Length: 83
Image (cartoon, rainbow, N blue to C red; front, side, top):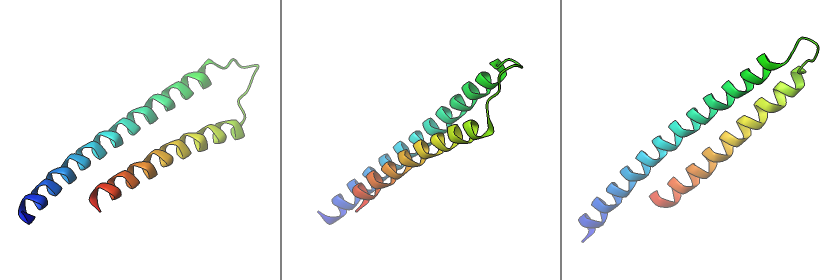
């Protein structure tokens, strides 16, 4: 019985790792899309208006915080399933 439980546990861990890898890839894709949109917005700004460095920094920090929040939740889910 213990062997079956360990095998199921290993299968479940492998499944979670695969989901983790997919979520990481999704995060990277979203990050790339967000950066492309931000770059397009910057290029779209005409010469008479400006985006301040602080606005760009705030946008970058917001993106980082969203990515980190998703990563923290993902780590908690994996931790719960493993332990």
